[in-house]
Length: 334
Image (tube, rainbow, N blue to C red; front, side, top):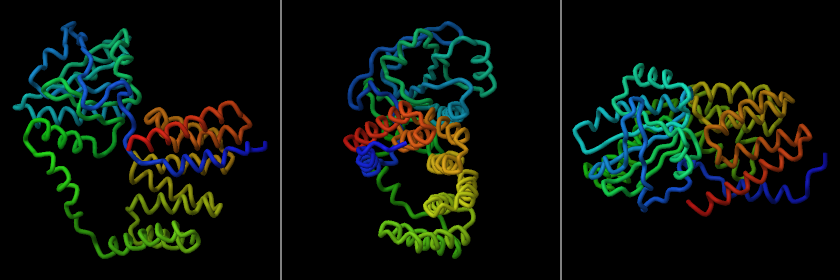
């Protein structure tokens, strides 16, 4: 099938504007503005509202039952609730999947959650807040102002939320967040340091178009530090460029083993399976990641490529268009 002549331009826009920021959480909430009124009942029928939490910092998480990342987020929030139990702070966990109350009660019981699970059975909050990814988390200050969001779940979830809470609770000045980001990294072995040097050199060579040299440096980085997920993932992408697909799959799979939440590793594997002609595997892994982060331009772009390879033009164009829109949106917002 002949590729439309305007697609290369679309790809250029996507790749230029794509950034690794967090997924969007609540599309209809604007940071710095009041949050719409919220009133929902919990599993026992008790009503909860924003007004009940006046004078407190409030965390709202919109989660999905049965989704591992939602459950991981709830577990982290249990730790956070204990960490800040003596502070003016509350957590409300909301779901629209209310058909199986016994399963929700089992989640609350098994995880020993100290905060209420609220039922958005009419999807009122889901619509008004513009929930865009599961789970998504919002922090609301003592005056009811929306201050921070976290879309999805990754390893830094608990640490990031805790730091933002300390700022909103007045425990830590906002300037301290910047200084903490500049703290020294943990001690590295000599092999790990050498691996980092090779990795950084490989990135520089790749930017200069010296792909063969970059590939060798990526290989050295992965050999020196076999536990470096980034080295394996970037090596996997470099091998894909060289059409060494089986080796690429090995390194991308290893990268995902080391960092199971890496979207890059999953995107790379999706591309590798497409190149191998295993489109079912490609669609499965890419669609699963898109469900977690539906505003990812990179995932939409890869899905477009898969559908185009299958001759499913309408589906391909749908994802190409979404890729361009989300890349442009992130370019304007960040």
